[in-house]
Image (cartoon, one colour):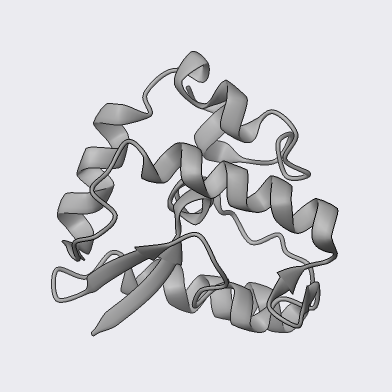
Length: 128
C-alpha cells in the first residue's frame, strides 16, 4: 500500500488523537494513521495536497484555505522535508523511526509547529 504525505503531516500523525476539521477529515485521518503503522506501507513525500488533505474541507483548488495560509503550510512542509531525502520513497515504519530521531525536542519542531492551530491538542508536541 502507498501513501502520499506532506512533510508537516508526518508530525501531525504522531500527535493525532481524533480531532479534526470535519467528521470526514477525522475518519480519513484515522485511516491514514492506521496505514502508516503498517510495515507494508510505502510513503512518498510532498509539499502539496496529499492523502490527508483530500478529505479536508479547507482544501480549495489545491490550496489550503487561501494563498496566505497555503504559503505558511508549504513552508512547514519544506522545513520537515529538508531533513529528509524527499525524492525517495520510504518504508512507513522506518520513516517514522527517523522522524522520532530528527524531531525529538520542542526546539527541533518549534519553528514548524509554533503557529499550528492544533498546537495545544497535539500529543506529539506536548510529549516532547
